[in-house]
Image: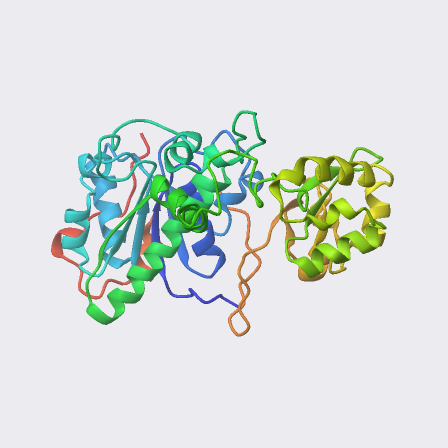
Length: 379
């Protein structure tokens, strides 16, 4: 099946991290995404290992050459979406800014992804995921009490607060354009996205149910019933027994009858309860605890590494991971009952001739200036 976005035409100005992730999501769900690479870009990684480039064709363009810019504008005239992740002003300097592109195609959704956003005092400053989530308040909240903040890989800024935000934003704009006939610019900033992911916690803080002390709240590792524990074999398990009935089941299965555990929601008791629960989990191996607790109402799961996760029976049953050219990787998500996604393919070798794409992407009413040469300079 082609997926729910079959027929959507997307131009991706290839970058790193969150932009390719957003484009991968769109391609996974059936969009035809054309990657525009700079000369030499992407040569540092074998294609089958570049998971975020899967499922789409790539073309090498030297955007310093006028004929290459004209070819991008020909694609734009036929596209539904363009996404880019350059610093503010770069697309304008290339002659591919929103004004130019929307003049060629008034229905175009022009998706822009940056760390700080298109405006504001830091808009033109360099930065990376760690900086963007630091400014949003997210990084401060992650880690153990009394210790430095812990970097949550690039999940919060680049991918959750960046790539996913952009993919969601452009699809919202596509939906609106189909009724209004007008495109628009989508300004997706990772600082905004990371802040948005913290909506729940800003609300809890305002209500006095969450404090700014890292690792001392009920969902950040401060409580004993929502944490990870080492087992006898040095592997870890996770416990999320938040509700009273699940907490009671955890204590029951673990054979805990200590009256101190009745003080589940008393933060003053959490440090002692954490030590005692840690002692309990050290008495068995991780697999032994899985045999007792996995699938029960105790809200339990083993902490799996990159190799173990694809082999877990639940992930195998749902086909959460797939193998593409011998590379194990996450499958497209979410799932659709009527228009399921196809298995993605490895990105083919970059090409230099856009002729067949331009022929298949017929413009409804291309501007005369858009009918330029399709050959691409690569020097």
